[in-house]
Length: 67
Length: 140
Image 1: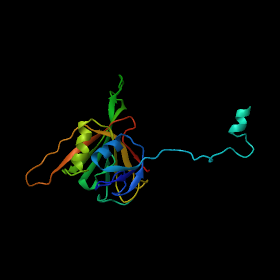
Image 2 (image 1 turned 180 degrees about the vertical axis):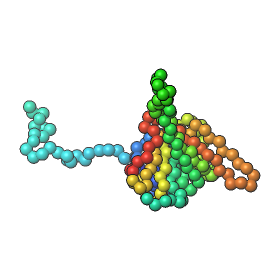
Image 3 (image 1 turned 90 degrees about the vertical axis):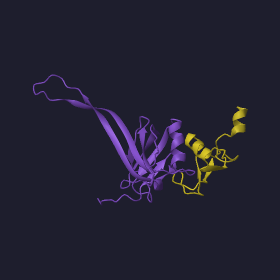
Image 4 (image 1 turned 120 degrees about the vertical axis):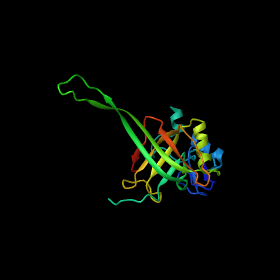
């Protein structure tokens, strides 16, 4: 998740107004409740289709299903 | 190695930068002195280093604004929370071998703000190491 420091003081060494990426853990929850930071974006890890394919010459998914 | 006037220290509590609301910091790490003496000809005592107790005491200015000392510390004390603590000599530089950072998970077992008429409100809070990793100095 991406957060922004919204309080008047630094958080995790990020200055007010700065954005940072972190997991939503217990300290982050406390900082959110205090209003020291806010959620800017929720990132969802994903691999784009077509990326990270097997090397050339390796059987692809369709060929494997035929066997 | 140059001598130092403490001016630019960084104090981080549960991620919050409380540096400018603190005016002193003191770290203590003590191994218990365990007597393992047996009978011997000299009567001398033999000891081993036992359990390690670590704490760091910070003197804070009483401040009650959003994100300030009371807002950060009171809930951590009340809820018996375990949280991160950091201290390094120079806040304008990252941790390094010449700017070592003390860090670890701690608890605020005591919290006692107080005030005296006409005086600057300041009080000490002792953070006690809360897990087996302890409070350690590191260069990163």
